[in-house]
Image 1: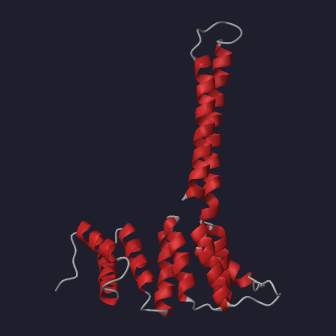
Image 2: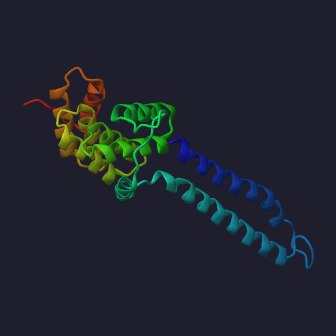
Length: 213
């Protein structure tokens, strides 16, 4: 989220600075020549339009790196090379997962994605890697890709309660209340004392659903 906010802030700041600087000039009384003339005011309007376009371009290009589709990930998997440890030996899956978790805790989303892709290049059935790739896609707003990733996680590990909870959140975000309810209720069945039980209960109440009966 912080990576997304930075380009938004830059775009807004660029636009505000230019508007604040140019708007008083546009309000000057019209004269035939010099500042305040129709030619200058027309120029200022073009500059304001350009400022708006620059801001929009900054916003769009700045948010692109988070839009890592599953197609891109699959392509990266095909060309991924094994990561090397400090002693020159290929890193084990456990080492790669530990590194990915560390990146996640630091908020280094891109590095975490790369690390999980490396895991999947070695073990394409690794449920943890799919779960967290799905989580990052969900946080980036890519519900379709997120649903695919957590679906992969659950296909390899049906008892993965974190993926189950996440798939419920993704379904709810997409307006698929029935599917969300199914996953939430299955989560509560699998993990009645799970870390997300309170949130699941709150979400079920919010949509007027329950797991009774």
